[in-house]
Length: 357
Ligand code: ATP
Ligand code: MG
Image 1 (tube, rainbow, N blue to C red):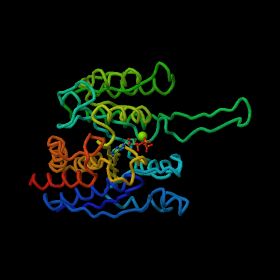
Image 2: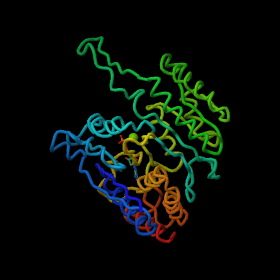
Image 3: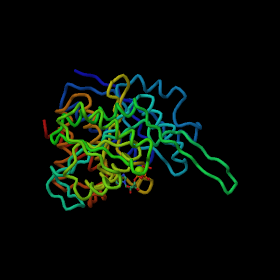
């Protein structure tokens, strides 16, 4: 029996709604597949907590989280609290303190779904974006100057360290070695950003020399975004800086059926700190409280968690259950064109997990 401790942060808006379904899935896995046990502790750290306490998490929040094997996050953000507080005081400190420098985001068209693109063959839409998660454009360095004068300006520095860039590119190449197409595509913009991006390109080429079996392409981000639409079958592993990866993966999510489906994993590959699993969508205030959010992104993130733990067979059980529900097509939330509630879709996935035993 393997035991895992999980800090669960349901968060704001639809976060707690989709998290409830995720926790049901974990329970179903314990019941049906034996061998694993999860001890989940909920942390009420969200925007309400901020409005009461003036901070998103307690002062020792990171120390508390450090003792868990894993972190599960729903979504963070509420209309009354600026994003630069909710995100910068909770999600980004966790990613940085725990060296979760890899943000894995699969772009995979699940069976049972149609892409808004003309692609029908599911193997043609199956790749993974490796987003740098600790530095780059989201550097927290810069400032405002000359306020109140005609020369007012804001400066934000991009920070690309050799250490940070090498480790993400190496991770991406190692992943490409394990995947079928043996291809790595790196997002760049060295024609417009003339210091950091040529440095990034150089490191791609250096690390690429250690992977002669992998075909490498460097594409400018603008062209690459277009290729996500026009020739997605070409991609296998796409590696991108923090900002570029962020934008590409919302696009990737749209191409495979929408934000309600897309999961992500914030990985600390060295495993000296907990990794964190979450949907890529936010708290979606427009649909919060209605019970109609799609829980699949959250549940798929649990499949990624199982893969991270090396329980690939359980990861597959979860993803297969999601796909079976989509193929059946009877229980779908409104974003998928149906009328089911969050809970009904979660229940149906749980039912499929039990059937799979
Ligand atoms: P953030 O800044 O936190 O990323 P955002 O403003 O980008 O938030 P999201 O919360 O990610 O917005 O969602 C954008 C829209 O997509 C929502 O308004 C909602 O309509 C839809 N959406 C997001 N997640 C889901 C979901 N799980 N189920 C259904 N619709 C969703
Ligand atoms: Mg967003």
